[in-house]
Every structure is written in structure tokens, then in C-alpha cells.
Amino acid sequence: MIILKDLIKRLLGWVWTHKQGALNVLLGLVVVFLVCLVHQKNGKVEQLRSQFDDFKIQQKIEQEKTAAVWRNQMQIAKEDYEKKVKALELSNVTLAANAERLSVALSEAKRKYANASEVARAEYTDTLNTVFGQCVSEYRRMAQIADKHAIDAERLSKAWPRIEEPP
Image (cartoon, rainbow, N blue to C red; front, side, top):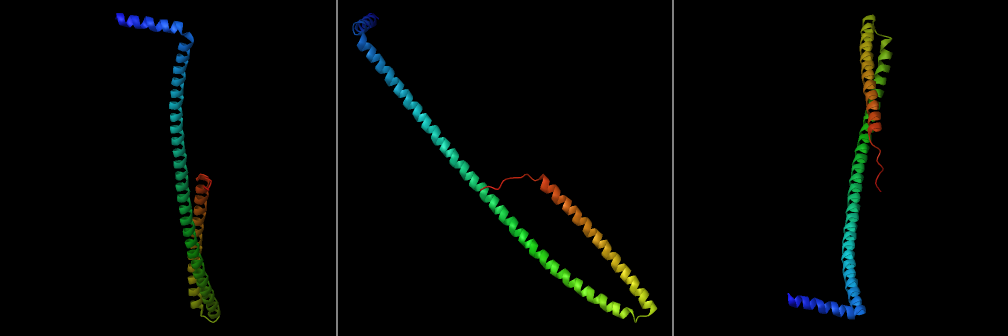
């Protein structure tokens, strides 16, 4: 204990006699402390910058993945649409051919109608009435289905969120 007191007295005495030198030493220690602190903070800043750069890279990768998924889905939808359009065109060709055959059959029936007996004409008229009744029923059913489809498509179009296509 006495040695410690003596050491403190000597240190304070030296500081008192060498005020400028002691102040320089103290300032040097403060500067060293501050340099160490700045260096430590710079390391932390660099670490945060690195993490931020990694985050930006991850975001870019995610954006590219999302864009690729969108492109793929759009390509699939386009191909599906084109297949359906081709099938519809084929169906239209078949329908046109069937309509042409029906027209020819009706022309033939019209030609034969003039020479037919009264019973045959009545039977022919009843058959035509039945066929045309079925045609009208089918036409109404198809019109209702088409109207319902148009309403559903409009509702879905209005309800579907508008998303800008990714670059």
C-alpha cells in the first residue's frame, strides 16, 4: 500500500513538472483510442455495405426468377390459346361443311316436295317443324352459354389485378 502511494505521488509529481509532455501523452492516447474506434466503425460500415450488396444481388436474382416465371406462364398461355384457336378454326370448317350438306339436302327436299303426295308433304312439314324446333332450342341454349361466358369473362377481367409485365 505504501509502495502504491509512493508510486502515485511520483507519477503526479512527474506530471506536474512535465505538464506539456503529460498532456501530449494523454492526447496521444486519446488519438490512438479514437483511431481504433474509427477503424472498428469502418469495419462495421464495410460489413453492412457488404450485407446490403448481397441483399441487392438477392433481390435482383428474385426479380429475374419472377420475370422468368411470368415469361414461362405467358408463353404457355399463348401456346394454349393458339391451340384452341386452331381447334376452333377446324371446328368452323367442319361446321361450314355440315351446313353446306344441309343446304344441299334442303334443296333436294324442296325439289321433291313439289311432286310429293299430300301425306308425304304433311310428314315432311312435321319433320321440318321438329328439326327447326330443335335448332331453335339449341341456338337459344348456345346463346345463353355464350352470354354467361361473356359475363364471366368480363367479371374476371375486372376482378383480376392489373400487374405490369416485368422487364
